Structures are given as C-alpha cells and as structure tokens.
Amino acid sequence: MKHILLLSVIVIFHFFHSAASTLPHADSYETRSTRAERFFTYKEWSSALAMYQLMLDERPDEVEPYYKAIVAGAMIGDSITQMNMLERTQQRGISLDSLFNGVRSVSFAIDEAEAYNDFLMLVKSKQPWLKRRINIYLLNYYNFRNDADNIISTAKELLEQTPENTDYIKYMAKAYIELGNIDEALKCYKHILHINNYDYDALLALGNHYALLLLDPTYCSPTVKMPHENLAALAQSYLYDAYNINPTPYVKKLLDKVSNTVNP
Image 1 (cartoon, rainbow, N blue to C red):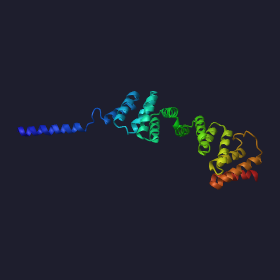
Image 2 (tube, one colour; image 1 turned 90 degrees about the horizontal axis):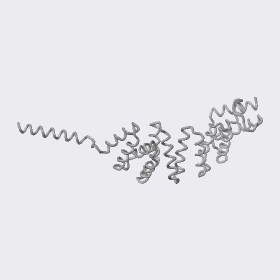
Image 3 (cartoon, one colour; image 1 turned 60 degrees about the vertical axis):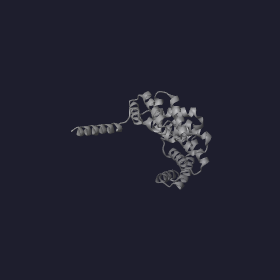
Image 4 (cartoon, rainbow, N blue to C red; image 1 turned 135 degrees about the vertical axis):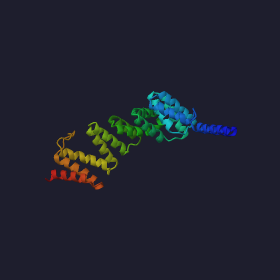
C-alpha cells in the first residue's frame, strides 16, 4: 500500500512538473511579447516600448519589435528611441525595406499614418545620406494620400539628383492636375518627351488635352487661345504617336473624333 501511495505521489509530481515546464516563464521572451502586444493594443505606448526593448535585448535580430517600438516612440514623441531603434537595425544588418514597410503597415493598421510620415522625416533630417531613399518612400506615401503639394516638393528634390527620371516628373504632372494647374502639368509632359520621344503616357496626356480643348467646350480654357485647326493638328500629332506605340480602342476613337472636326 505504501509503495502504491509513493508511486502515486511521484506520478503526480512529475505531471505538475511537466505541466509547469510548458508554461512561459514570468520573464520569458514569449511572456514579454504577450505583454507588449497588450500594451500596444491599449495604446499604453511607454509600457509597450519598455517591453519591446527588453525583447530586443534578448533577441536583437527579431524585426517586428523594432518597428513596433518605433511606432510606439512616435506616438509619445520619443525621437531618441526611434533613432536608436533604427541604428540598432543598421548594426544588425536588418534591411531598411523590412523596417520601413513594418512601420508603415503598423501605423496604417492603427490609423496613425502620420507616425510613418513623421519617422521618415526624422530619419531624413538625422541621416541625410539616406535622403534620396527616404524621399522615394515619402513620394509613394504622398501619392497614396493624394497629397499634391508634398508630391511636387518631394519629386523636385528627387529630380535634383536624377533629372531625367520620367516617373518622378509624371508624379508631378498628376499632382499639378489635381491642383488644377494644367499649364504646369503640360510643361511636365512636354519635358518628358524631351527626354523620351516615345513615352506613351506623356503622348496620351497631351493628345487627350488638346483633343478635349477641341471637342469639349466645358473643358478648361488654354492660357493662349489657339485656332481650331492648330488644336486639331496638335491632338492628331500626339495621338497618332501614342496609337503607334499602343493601338487602343480609346485612342482610335478619339482620333476619329478629332479627324471629323477637320473633315466633317
């Protein structure tokens, strides 16, 4: 009987010991991660930041705690910690793309997109050698937000280093259209054609503009009035070149309409 009782005690002891060993330790990485996520969810930014820092002390190659710590730091205006997180990722060889994309996705997920913008601007000011790369992130962000003024200013900064990058000029042209500044948009598209005579987007934009001036009386008035035949000639010239590159039904239909105004 004593042997059976002793055996039962040993079995129970081993059961509880095994069960306890499967539970996360009070200061384990997993426990800290759970607490950090809870703090972050409830917007207890300082507490979340402290947890992420402890997690990174234990596992410095994990990417997620860095970008979540950066967002938490942004929410309390802690620029020192944000830059410290960036510098630690640089020391660990963690890619900027993974870090910035993480900050972006988390900021958007909690409806605090400005945290992403503010972090990019902070890095741009503190690490000027990353200016061009940061400006590319900013340009994409401003384009997503339809922020025309910042699209133009950021594209201009990028064009100082790569003046023949037609993608940046197209961003500017669309932003000018958004602002209602058609003349500046036309200058952008014509500049693109000076760089590349066969740029389809620029040819179509210009052909479409002159065709609408000719066909739609409600469309914006040009700065300089043109005779009917000059508008038709310009529209046809750009649209023919666009059609030769990409013969779409839309361009064909527009060309036919322009031609009918010349030869009704």
